[in-house]
Image 1: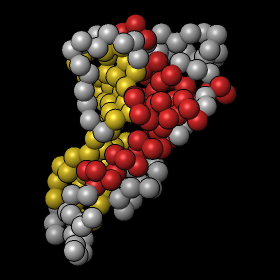
Image 2 (image 1 turned 45 degrees about the horizontal axis):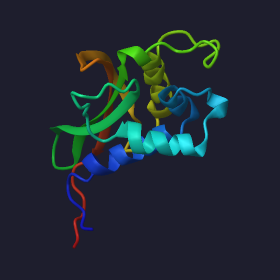
Image 3 (image 1 turned 90 degrees about the horizontal axis):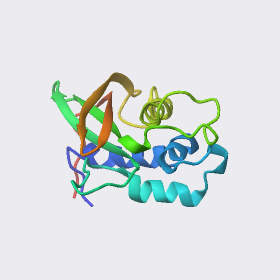
Length: 168
C-alpha cells in the first residue's frame, strides 16, 4: 500500500496495542488473572476484545470489564521537516470491576484502572519504538465517566518527521 503523510495515526496505535497486549501485568489486570497465570490465549483475548484503536462503549454495555483505547493526534506541524504527534492511551474500567481481588493480586494496592495506567506507562514511557525520539509522558488525567465506566487518559509526546518520500 502507498505511504501517506499521516501513516502514524494508523501504524503507531497498532504497535502500541501489540506491546500492551504482550505485557503479562497489563493483560493480568484486564482479564483478572495473576501475572504468572496469564497465557497466550489471555493475551489474544485482550488484543481482540479489550485493547482497541478507537474509543467506544455501547450504551447498553453492562459487562464488568476493562478497556484500553489507543489513538494518535497530529497536534502541531512545526515546519516542513518535523511534526509533533500525541499518543493517547485511555484506560476505562467498569465501576464494578475497579476493585482488585487480594488473593489474585497479592501485595498490589490501589484499583484496577490506576494499576493498568501504571503498568502501561511502564511499558511505554521513554521507549523508542515510535517516531524519532523517545515517548515522553505529557499528562495523566481523569475523564468524565462513560456509561458506568471510569477512565483515565495517558498522553505521550511523539516527535516525528513531517515529510516522507511518497512513492507509488
